[in-house]
Image (cartoon, rainbow, N blue to C red; front, side):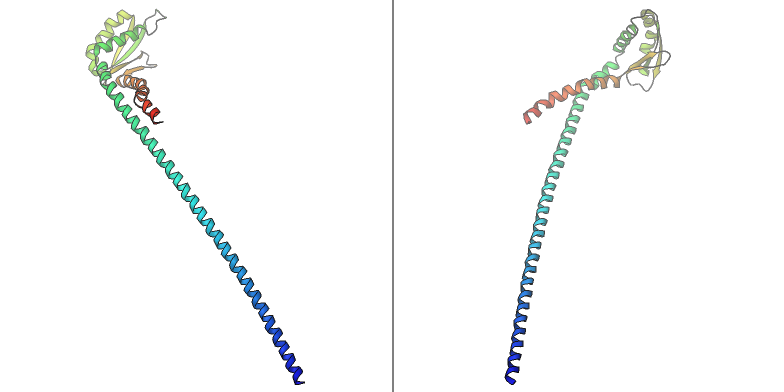
Length: 210
């Protein structure tokens, strides 16, 4: 009886130990699998973070280079513009100013304009000419008397203290006026010379650079 009890006890003990060992082995295996999964997930996340960081660094590099290139091009354009304006102003400003203050030259220009104002009609024209105040003495009497008779035109002269040089002309009814001021001539010649100046100064260097 006692022997059988001992045998049963030993059997239960051995089965318990074996079961415990199996459960421990399973727990260990599950833990190892979980640890491997965590490790793999962490590695994937780390790889993604590194890849994202590399991509962001590359994007930043490209954007920075683009911004630098754009700033350089804008700066170069502005420098070209300033150089062109400086040269055209130097070439044009003083000669135009001198011409528009030359009463004899202005007289000839006005004479040609009036003569060709309406070449298809023999009817006299009535025109109004606005002059700078400093030209009133030299030109007013000539335009209102001699030029009127020579050109078969009724010419009224007005004076503007805001006009620096040149003149404006239009019908006496004031419906419109055409300006031939110093600024108008200067802007006209600048518009004509500016593209040629740019071509002369920069086109060759741009081609060589390319």
